[in-house]
Amino acid sequence: MVLSRVLGLGITAGSILLFVPQIIKIFNAKSAKGISLISQLLALVAAAGTASYSFNKGFVFSQWGDSFFVAVQLMIIVMQILYYSDASAYAFAFFAFCWAFVFAVIGNYVPSDFLTLIQALGIPITVASKSIQAWQNYREQSTGQLSLVSASMQLAGTIARVFTSVQDTGDNLLIASFAIAAVLNAVLFVQFFLYWNEAKRKKMR
Image 1: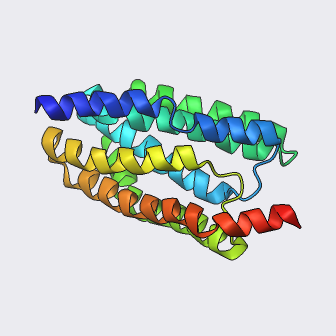
Image 2: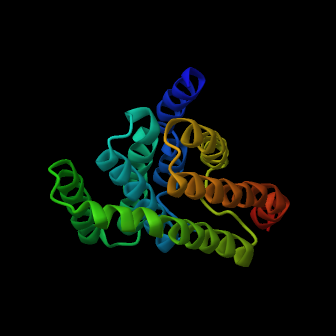
């Protein structure tokens, strides 16, 4: 139990910087080329759903804090995609909507049954999110502006989170969600190395 709590806190701390390399990469390039908007939106719904569901269930912060921080960073990435696609008005409207939802959950204005439904849907949502991005990578034979550092941290985090979910919650929904996410994150991680030489060839042309 102690190891699980320490590991959970470590995952939460690491999640604060999980997508920062990705955010910086998009900012420096002033482009989100190769990053699927739908994939990021679905990932955001899954992360926000896990954080909201766990908060509502009263689980310890170390068990769901990473999902909250990941959701915040995914929100920023979605805003970047919209902003650099000349849809800045949608980016700021999206920002307002996300924080309205956060305060609704904190204020217990969102029914528990709805949060449970979101968490249950988190599994197919996660599969869809990762599959869409993996397919886009395959189609373009490139990982585009995706960050290898973020992908590596995400893979390690989901693997560790399977263990902490078993130890701290015993919640089958959470365990299944993280286990499936770990497998799909592994696929995305491997794609960086599959398409590494292809990306180099494109730059040399």
